[in-house]
Structures are given as C-alpha cells and as structure tokens.
Image 1 (spheres, rainbow, N blue to C red):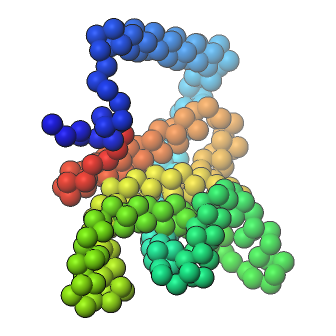
Image 2: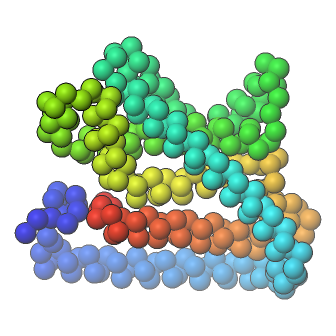
Length: 272
C-alpha cells in the first residue's frame, strides 16, 4: 500500500508504547494550554481589561464600518500583491530553469535575494530610499510592491518545484517529436506543474495577507492601521487587537480551507 503523504514515507507507524506516550504528551499539553488561557483571562480580569468600557465600542456600527474599511484596504493590497507576485514568480522560475546560463544565474540570485530579505526591509527601502531618488509613490504601492517582491521569491521556488515534479520523460518525448524547448516547457510541462502547485500557491496567500499588517510603516489604512487608530482613541489595547487577531485567523483559515478544497478536486496532496 503506497504512502499517503511524505511523512508516512519518511517515518514508521508508531507502536503501542509510542502511542501511549503521544496520548500522554497531548493530554499534558492540553492541560498546560487550558491553564495558560485561564491565567491570561484571570490577568485580564485583575487588570480591568475585561471591563465593559473596553468592549462596548464593538457594539457600535461605526466601529465595524471603520474596521471593514480597513479590511477592504487589506484585501486590495493582498489581491494586487498576489497577482503581481504570481506573474513575477513565474517569470523568475522560467528564467532560472532556462538553458541560457547567464539568465539562469541572474534569476537564481534574484530569487534567493527576494526570499532572504524580510518584507519589512523592502518596505523601509520603498518608504525612505525611493523619495530620495525622486520617485514618489502612494502608500498603497509602497506597501504592495515590497510584499510582491518578498512573495515572488517564494512563489518562484514553488513553481520550480512543480516543474521538477513533472516526469522528465515528458520533456524528452516532446523534444523527440520536434518541439522546441520553449514549446515543451509552455505547452507540456508548465500546465502540469501549475496543477501540482495550485494548493501551495493558494496557501501562500496567507503569508501575503499577514505581510499587509506592516502597513503601519507607510500609514496605509488597512485593517491593522485602523485597529491602531481605534486602540489609540479608545485606549482599548487588548480588546481591539484580540478582535483583529480573530479576524485575521478567520481569513487565513478560509484561505487554508480553499487550498485543501482545491487539492482534493485536483487530486494533489498537501504535505502536512
């Protein structure tokens, strides 16, 4: 019987003794987690953070309208950055897998740089360096472009993994019937590679959405920035950021569920 996941292929099925240890460890971890949550709630209660005055603002329509306006800003940046990073990541992958060695080397360097530099440093560069070079951008693009660059390096490697997953015999078969390398890659290899990595591409949206929370650097009105304004105006630190955290968790959970649904429909396994 073939293994269902990479984990099954790499590790043996645990025996009875190991299962008992796993159950005991899980139970102790659950008890510790419940105790930690109880302690946090107790500290909130002692310090007055559960007072109604910190939470009543979330019963007002104006508060939710303001948060929804920020959420629209988050979606605008996330979707734009996702589309641009998909295109740039695909271009970098095509360049890196090219048989033109200088182009392949250049794209490999760019991919590693984009993967290795944190999004925040890119944002600082666009926010501080670009104006000194005489290039003026709106807050939207000063956030969107850095997020795009950071994500494109990761997506280039995701695309490359998909290309490497396509059996080499298909490339050889295409070349044997007279197709050029470019046509083999675009007509045969790439469609299959994209199908393999669609779930991973969707999952990468989680990282893009989380990176948009750095909007405070450029004062772009996204969900986190609007939450900062609410926190400042109403002195509601815990309640505001707790509600916003729940919103982010719900959004990212929906994205993960979408990735799982797509993987089931396409028959591509997500390794967990």
